[in-house]
Length: 324
Image (cartoon, rainbow, N blue to C red; front, side, top):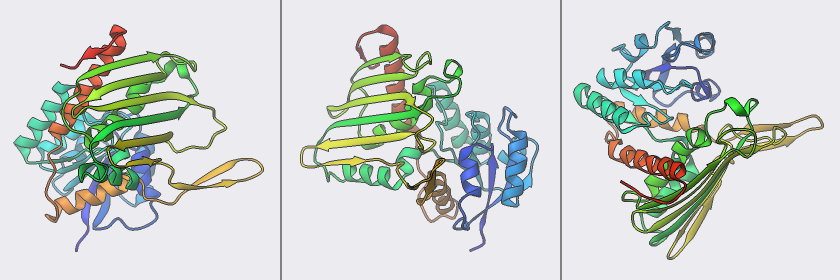
C-alpha cells in the first residue's frame, strides 16, 4: 500500500514523538510540517520538518487545507482548534491527542465542520490510547469487571519552573483523565464535589474531585503538580488508576512504559512502548484507507465537557453541585 501522506500542525511533544519513533509509520508518511496557529513554535516546526525529511510550510492552513494531505495531526502546545476545524471542513481525518474543544460551543463548531466537510475527528486522549488504558476500558465495556462501582485516579506532575505562571492543574491534566473516565463509564455526571488549591507554589496546582457518575460509579481523583525535579518521570507525570467492579478490579499505571537507567550523575528514562500519538496515527491510517469505521467522538466529548463544567462549578461554589 502506498503510504498515506500526513501533515503535522505544531511542533509540541506529540509531533516530536513521531521523529523519535525510530521505525516507519505503518501505512503513513509525514510529508509536511507547519507551526501551530499561534506561530510561537515556528523554529521548532522547521527543525522538526528537517528531522522528518518533510516539507516545511510557513502557515498552519497550508497544511490543514492541503488536498494532498488526507491525514492531519494537530500537535501544537496551544489547542490549535482553528486548525482542527479547518481540516475537518476540508474533509480530512484529523488526529488531536489533546482536548480538541474545552467548551460546548467550540465542540459544536467542530461537529458542524465535520458534518459540512465530511472530515473525521480522532480525538482520543493519550491516556486511553495507551495499551494499559485501552485494555482497562475494554474490560469495563465487556463487563469483565462486573458493575463498575468506583474509579480511583491519581495524577502527579512535576512542579513547574514558574509555578505562579503555570496553567491550572485541571487544564493540564484534567481533560485527559476525564476523557478516560467517560470512556470507561456511561451516562452524564450526577453530583460533583471538588476542591482546587495552591499547595506547591501555584495558584491552582492541586485538585481533589469526588463525583457520582451515571450508573452509580463513584470517581475519586487527586491531581497535583507536586513532584520534585529530581524524580525522573514521563511528560504526562505519574498516573495510577484503579477500576473496581462487582466481580473484579484492575489497577494500571499507563505511562510507566519505560526502563529507568540509574547513573552516578542522573537518571535516564528510555521508553519501550509506542507513544500514544503513534497509535492514534495508525488508527487514522486505517480510517483514511477505509479499513476501519470512522468514529463519532462528539457525544463522548459532550459528556467530558459536562463533567469538567460540573467540577469547575463545584470548585467555585465550595460545595457539591448537581450536574446540569
